[in-house]
Every structure is written in C-alpha cells, then in structure tokens.
Length: 306
Ligand code: MTE
Image (tube, rainbow, N blue to C red; front, side, top):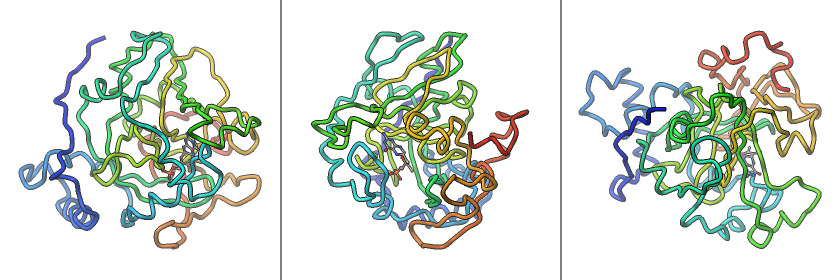
C-alpha cells in the first residue's frame, strides 16, 4: 500500500492558542463560510476544522474540559485530574498486532511525524447524558491505518489502554476487565470523522483527557473514545470491549448516539452542556448523521445503540 507522506507539523509555542482567540477565530471562520476564498487570512494549521463543526455552541472552557473527566483507571469520580498526573507519557510506545508492523512496538513521536496535525471542533456526547464542545487537534484515524497497513481481511480494530496498577490505583480493583479496550469496524475507522487526538485547545493533550494519544468518535457515546492507547490490534473476529464485558445490556458494541433508545436507567433524549449547564435535545448520531448513516444501512435504528 502506498503511504502518502504529508508535511509534518508541530504546534510551536508561539502558536499555542488562547481560549479567547479560539472563540473569535471560530466566529470569523463561520462568518467567512469558506476558507478557500481567503486562504491567506488564516493560519493553514487551522484551515480544516470547519467541515465538521456542526454546532453553534461555544467550545467548552479549558478548565471545565480538564476538571470533569471519566478515566476509570484513576478512579470513578469526575475529579481524577490530579491522580492522572502520575502517568508518564514521555517516549510513548504503541504495540501493534496484525498488518505491516505486527509484533512491533512503534514510537508515537516517530509515527506522528508522518501526519499533518489539524484541528477539529467536535461535539462530544457521553452516555451519561452530558456533552461538551471540544477543539481537538490530531489527525484522521484513516491516516494512521494507511501507515499501519492492516491485512486486507481485517474486519475490526481493537484499541487498548495501559495496565499499570502502581500508576493507576483503580486498576487494583480486579473485578474490572482491565485493560480498557474498545473495538470498532474497519469501515467505521476509515470514516473521515474518526479522529486521533493528541491535543486540545492547541496544547498537548492533558493526562486527564487521555494523553498522549486517544480516539475520538464524535457520533458515538463517549466511552468508545478510548484514552492513552498502548495497543492496536487488527482483528478478523469481534472481541468484547471493556464496557460490553461489564454491562452488555447498557453499553453495546455500536454505541451510536440515539435519543430514541434510552439507557436502561435514564433517558437519552436530552443532554446537559457541562460548561453552561444548558439542556439540548440529543440528535441521532450526535448530529453527524449525514457523514455516518451509510455505515449502518440495514441496521434497525432502534438497535443502533447495541
Ligand atoms: N478511556 C479510558 N482508558 N478509560 C476511561 O475510563 N472513559 C470514557 C472515554 N475514554 C474512559 C476512556 C468515557 S466514559 C468518556 S465519557 C470519555 O473518555 C471522557 O473523556 P474526557 O474525560 O476527555 O471528557
């Protein structure tokens, strides 16, 4: 398979963007309609984000995004940000099973160099009925797949988080099926919305948000967006994910956002913005229907959650 090498890009300190600048720039971008008309007006690193920016809601403030987290390895409360600082994210390695790099460990730094980093403002909807607007940066998952060259008969991709109970104290709870694992189909992984985040708000991804590398699948409930990935496996058969193993009737494989299918213990019709506290009606596929519905043709929309 041909590897299309793109110019690598790293955010320079001087470009680290302040929240206010983000908000103003987003307004400008939305106002312009298309950046192609005035490409020189806006830094090229920022030029790709408008395509999937579906919401008029303001990006959730940095302090909120980084102080209200789900990261069960570090505890079950939303205040895990301090505990998560114990994870050392330097010289991060990812082991691969299947494809060109099968049996090898690849260094994150050397892989990232192959991709052009871009910003994506996505709405992120948790199964717990809260949501947030996140200016991620990173690269499309499909780019990583091209690089890793899975076998042609690959059907599923599994992602795993680290397992180190000395660092993440909640991993001492042996009844959880650690390590955290998520699985998606190859077709889903190749959808242009599927994103690998290495940062947010123009800064390196904070530990509590999944540093140094996490998955972001905006049309699915947030639990599919696995943090701190250390293993990628190309599979022919579907395996059970972390949450499917714990509670299969509550956290299914597809986990596509669907307001019509309630969670067993609460409704999914509305969501609360964690920044403003405002409530909004939840949309099918979290509002990304036009880009992803083809993936689920023939699947009963009432069963999309599972
Ligand atoms: N990834 C790992 N490894 N461990 C987790 O507990 N929680 C998931 C997902 N990824 C989780 C994870 C859930 S339930 C949500 S809602 C999001 O991360 C939360 O992402 P955030 O903390 O950046 O908002």
